[in-house]
Image 1: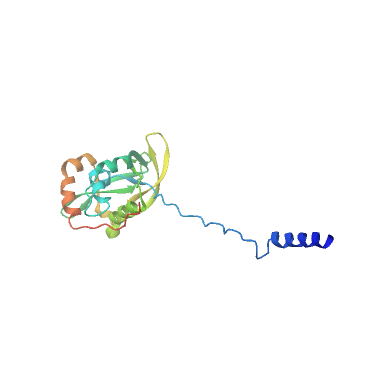
Image 2: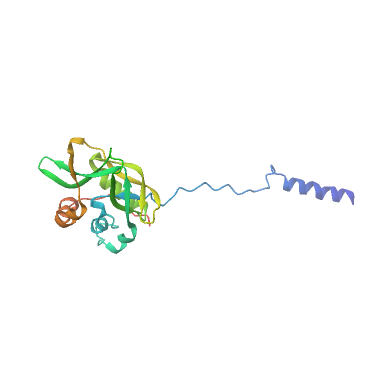
Length: 197
């Protein structure tokens, strides 16, 4: 009787020992990278839902859908910066530039844009990084609920002589320049980033 008891204890010790080859442990899952893209503070052309709908459509054959864009946008402000018009030889352009301000009360009114997919964020980055005139910088964005949100903003990275002393006005752009902007920018242009729903 005793040998059978000892044998059962011995087998139990072998089967439950942590170094026993019979013990199968599940590997610890690797942490997954965040799939939610970081929001953007936009302050110029990208505040126009019509333009965003064109830029963020799933493919060139997909019709722009402004209704999908509106929930991604909310009014917002960034402090410590100012928005200026850009000047290129023939006159002022339809593009604005954000630059750091020496005025402690300076701020830019714009929108907090929360892309739905990483593909949309890549398309925005590709659109703004063309020619490396802008660089992406982290900022604190203030939204209507008095909350502060960490986001990125495209800051002017080009020659400072291109900066006009005049502010850039979104309402004037929509009224006088949005249609021309569509014709000049989107004709024959492709934006990288396959959709990853």
